[in-house]
Image 1: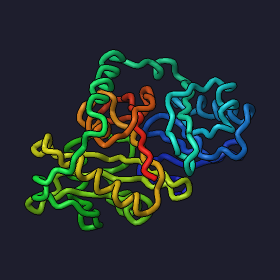
Image 2: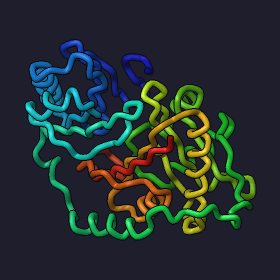
Image 3: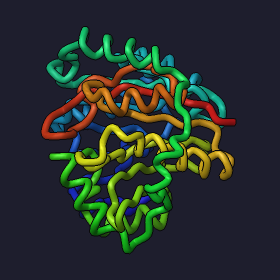
Image 4: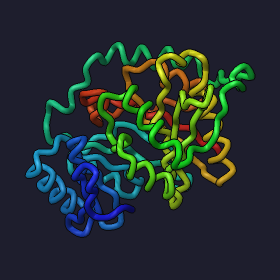
Length: 284
């Protein structure tokens, strides 16, 4: 875990009634990180704390044992990450302080996209033609070019991927970044945020240069990530991806990730709060 205060964007870690939490001002939400002492009383105090900060949402990946306390406190189950806790399922719990934050726009369109994805389930085949794109683990020397690509693709992003120190620290800590290179230029990126304790990893930070989309490059980058994660002994992979973006949803479905829910207005990405589809894959 990083220091209590994250100087990159004023987000910070704290304890509320002995419960560890992350105050995510960037996304106007609070994330509960500790389930050991969760009770109805502690959750009520957390809700009060978040309300005073004018945050819109509280989230937590709950285990089965803590589920009753969350439901009693008014949390809703927005999805499930099968195998999140060393093979045991996690429930994606959300509490909406601001009722406007709980409104899912274009619901029918987003559900139609998921149905289209299901027709592509488990259809990924390694694209031999993309061998002209070198896929490798990113190094610190790649950071300036990674920032340039991220800035091209995302107007805003839930984590400080435009910050050199953040990328350097996470690259040397717990995030595995993979890049696809063509003509000595990075054209696609994806990463795996690794939870060593629970043996799960989040596939995230997926970005492809506009000029190189539609060539199956990102799918191969994710495949490379999966191979590394499997060799490291991870059990579960999951991704929270933009519910309105067809391409990333298609890629995950092709890789045999299963749709397990949607987190409404979950984070600030591309200039506004967006719903995030949950996709899960077990690789043990």
